[in-house]
Length: 212
Ligand code: HEM
Ligand code: HEM
Image 1 (spheres, rainbow, N blue to C red):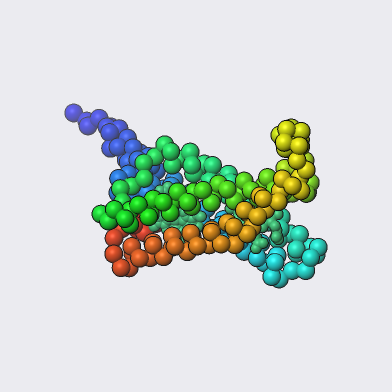
Image 2 (tube, rainbow, N blue to C red; image 1 turned 45 degrees about the vertical axis):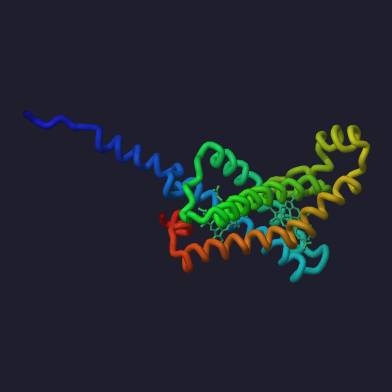
């Protein structure tokens, strides 16, 4: 009798693929990896644009304005990616920590929470503190927060504040506290911790966010 085609191996292979999209106890899945590395690249691009503007351009020249618009566009993209990342994170367990050191695991967890906080607060303070009406999201024009009905309703009419008074503390957080210091310290600590796990402890922490 001719052997009937069995769909079981095909279905199992597809299921296996679907499972690797999600995190497991041992590894980050491919969605979490893509979202993680996309955020890392976008952070770098956002810093490059704003510091190129500061260090290499004269005020009000074309390059100066393009570098700022690039910073805004990449910054808003980070906001979108982080929103998706948070949704994925709450519906997905993180892998079990590789090390059994409770202090190390506590620090890693605190570091990750702080990184998530930075990833949310930076785009938020950046946008809420944007007053110019010619902000761009790449090719599309978007209104600065000061030109939105939300600003008029909540800040101007509700709180009775001018945009200048409203943006001052946001700018301070965006630039002076997080942008210039805290984000750098956190990211540097995060990278050093990943290298420490890889080269000194020689565990799979870095591998499971890359090839694992
Ligand atoms: C994760 C995303 C972001 C990061 C890491 C980031 C980082 C920074 C940094 C480091 C600075 C310069 C601080 C300094 O004065 O030395 C800056 C300035 C600025 N950011 Fe962001 N930013 C982000 C998102 C945004 C967004 C979404 C907007 C607005 C839509 C924005 C608007 C601005 C503006 C207007 C400035 C002042 C420009 C200047 O001083 O040249 N940023 N940002
Ligand atoms: C070269 C740069 C980077 C390297 C080598 C790196 C490496 C890693 C590794 C190995 C993990 C897994 C840690 C574990 O399993 O305990 C991880 C997770 C994480 N990384 Fe990075 N990372 C980098 C850049 C960044 C940047 C720029 C950010 C954000 C600004 C970031 C935010 C995070 C967060 C929030 C987690 C926790 C993920 C979760 O459990 O949801 N990383 N990173």
